[in-house]
Amino acid sequence: MARKSQLTGPAVNGKKKLNGKEYGRELRKLQTELVEMQEWVKATGARIVVVFEGRDAAGKAISVISLMLLTKVITWNDIAANKQAWGVLVWFATLVAMADALNTVGFLKWFADRTTARLANVPQVALIIGLVAVFFYIHYLFASSTAHTAAVLPVFLAAIVTVKGLPIRAVTLMLVYSLGLLGVISPYATGPSPIWYASGYIPTRDFWRLGFIMGTIFVLVLLMVGLPWVLHFAA
Image 1 (cartoon, rainbow, N blue to C red):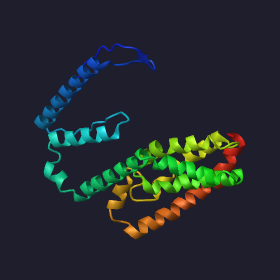
Image 2 (tube, rainbow, N blue to C red):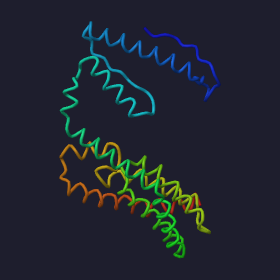
Image 3 (spheres, helix red, strand yellow):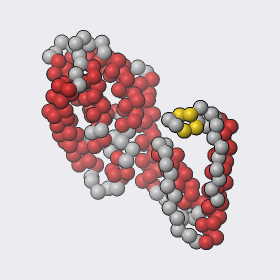
Image 4 (tube, rainbow, N blue to C red):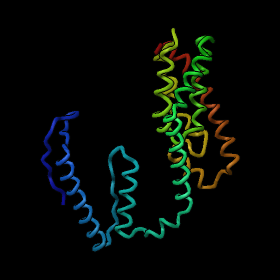
């Protein structure tokens, strides 16, 4: 069932890069093969596992759900009945849109400029601690770490480079390291967070309380262990 494709175009990392026409042609072949596989599964009753490789998580999820619908593993009524998932989709999408609006109206740049201006006259270590803490806790305004990174990190870096004598590389590393820790602080902090929250195992009040406590512990450990390291090796 598999077919070989002749790829042309410039090489990227040792592989051929598809142009627009070639991509469309290969995509149609893939769609044809998926339909053939669907018909084979329906005819034979086989149980299969399909692995999608790539970086687009949303695209892979939609593809998998589409296959499950086509092969009648689930029905549309099954999907429509999942009220928790639809609720998560609505309020998560709203929070993402609000975060984008904060960047569009210039609030984030204003906030970063004011923060660095107020901290500019404090000792260097205290300044770095303050910047990391502000960068970490401002995540309460954002749904997903991706939105936070795309909207906040650039404006913070632009503001940081204006502070004389600040070790830019060390501060940048601290901000980036904190991105891996802030997913615990709220029910919408990362993509999977709403799913954990919607499971109902942890009451809403406890989720927020424990998120703040654990987030604070994580960022304190980062500052106590990571900051001396980056100042010594990466400054």
